[in-house]
Amino acid sequence: MDLLPISTGSPPKRVLSRALAAIAAALALGALPATAAGVPGLEPKLLPAEQAFRFSARALDAKTLEARFDVADGYYLYRDRMTFAAATGGPTLGVAALPPGKRKHDEFFGDVETYRGSVVVKVPVVDGTPGQSVVVTADSQGCADIGVCYPPSAQQVRLTLPALGAGPGPVVEPARAQKGLFK
Amino acid sequence: MTDQTSEHLLVAGASRGAAGIPRWLAVALAGAVALAAGVFVARTTADSSPIGQEASALFGVTLPDLEGREQKLEQWKGKLLVVNFWATWCAPCREEMPQFIKAQTEFGAKGLQFVGIAVDQADKTQQFAKEIGLNYPALVGGMGAMQLSKTLGNEMMALPFTVVVGRNGRILHTQLGPLKQAQLDSLLSKNL
Image 1 (tube, chains in turn brown, orange):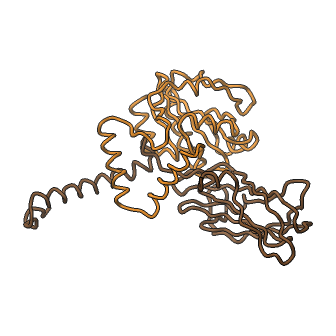
Image 2: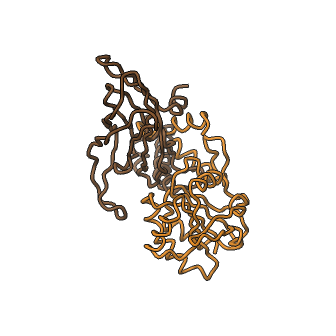
Image 3: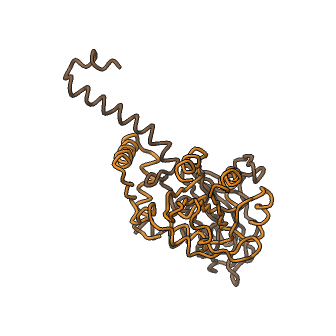
């Protein structure tokens, strides 16, 4: 430590602040592993699933929906656990065009693909007519990098298929997420 | 999940991301000070830590095992009990289970008892238990087990989540995320 020779300006204050900084740094270094290790009260701060994996959707036209997941930093979704379905009684959905994910080898699940950041998925509407409403349920499952996983979750939105030439409908988020985030 | 909780967590999440050393330092300092004082830090969310409390929420539970027989958790009262909430769809859960199997083999005779509660379907649980040679009871809880874990402090209802109960029936430790080998060793050396 070369604190004393250097601190010529206002010695006591400087030494104190440096010492505090050193203590703080040491504590931070010591505390980080403790945070990850789950010392009570210092458990990692996790987002609830619906905020870690924010789902929204809109109808591009009467034949196509656009579903979207915004995945928070430090979280990921599994590609093969993402599905979209429409409630019975309305139009049915075709096969979702899931974009390729990032490939990784999982010790237990084999080769898996994961999504981070924003994932946009086009979902065909098989027999929809303009003005018709469709209730879409998006199933997804993901994890956080710190080593926890969330159970499979189903999020739901109601979309109205736009009229011919009217352009895309509004972006709709599940009611629960809207309440939590904007009220 | 209440709105209040969501907002707190949102804030906590944001400070963690873009942030900032100052925030981290503040958190680290607060944590260190509180630990030094022998006090567990109050969480930003409303609920209190279950540490030190009677594990009555656990001991009152009855769940079916892999053979479909109802098992009451109370039967393991008096042991050093490690209750691990897990699922086959949770890779980190699967990863940590071999060390539990090993510890059960080594310390079972000394009074250590692992119990797995699967937030999963019975057939999948059964298949995986067989695959890894599970040597401690696996109970099948489904999503209801997730609610049980929430009452024990697993607010986010994520897995793995582990609760360690001392021989006196009080909760010694709760853990969201994998239990490190060093933590397990320390818990065993202090409490077995």
